Image (cartoon, rainbow, N blue to C red; front, side, top):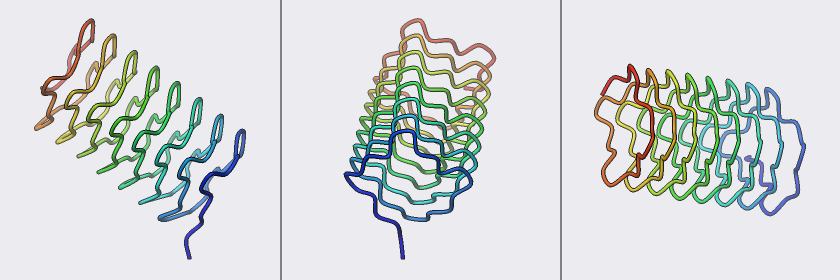
Amino acid sequence: ERVAMEDTQCADASFQRAVGPKAQFCRANLTNANFTESTCQGANFHQAVMSNAILTRSCMSNGRFVAAKLDSAKLDSGTFQSATFQDADMTGAVLSKADLFSANFDKAEMKKVICEEATATAAQFVKSKCEEANFASCEFLDAKLMQAELGATSFNAADL
């Protein structure tokens, strides 16, 4: 059976190396939570507050982060294949070396995101706000960046 932590206060909690397929974290406060090396495929973080959360080397494929607050979160070297970040606030988040294959960032706030050396093949950034983001050496094959706001964004050595 899956874990349900909806509307729960979990600030500063540690979920390191936890396994929680299809776990429910809707509207949970996960500020400063640590999910390092966790496997939560298909987990639902809809409207969760995850400011400064650490998801380094985690596997969150098919995860739902719709309207979640991920400002300054660390998602580096994680697997987020087919994850949904629609309408999420990811201001200042770090996604370096992350696997973002077919992820959806439509209408996400991604100002000052660091996404160096990430794989964003077939990812969608439709109407996302990516001002001052760093996508250096990122792979964007078949990605959709239609109507995205890209002012002062770096695509140095990116594969477009």
